[in-house]
Image 1 (cartoon, rainbow, N blue to C red):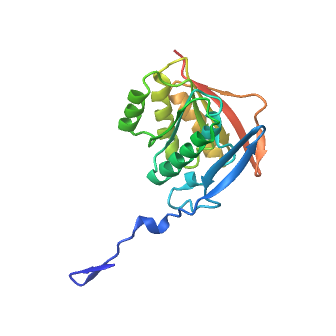
Image 2: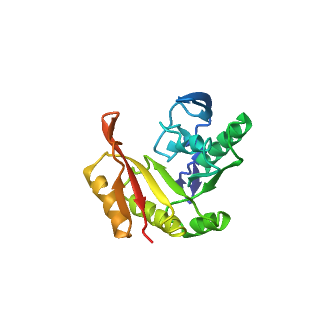
Image 3: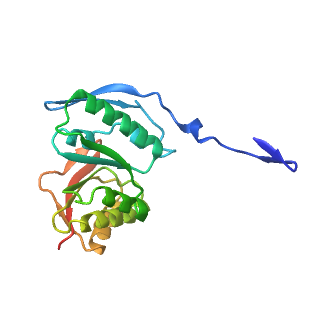
Length: 209
């Protein structure tokens, strides 16, 4: 807190909201066993939900089976723990290749999208999103980002969205935003299920040639 001309000026330090007490935690998925650094709990007020390990651990798990996997987040603190887990996973010897990396990506940020496409000029076979639709304001930005990535390999890339329904307005928005941008949305049969009293479903989304 500082005073200027008799008035108080309050300054907040972002680090007050950051918890780095990561714990090495073991997760089992069938025959796959993963050890990752994460928080046992985290505040969502400072946009650090990525410090938690959510059910699925999609990106790290995919690296066991795919030649190249790129994890993304827009938060520097989350990117740091992603990189720690990449180093941990790489040292385990479970990767089928060394192609596991983390890149900064804020949905809708043209510069960051361009940097990723420049770094990975061949594009991607799959874009995976695991329970990433929380705020209405972020949905249009998400699909604009997905559109750019899909266009880099139009017709040859799919967006797999594991979606958890929390509000009817969000359900409609997810479908409408995709359709508005010319995408085809198909529900993957047999994937509807109840997750902690909420309904979940997996969509396969493509951008036709």
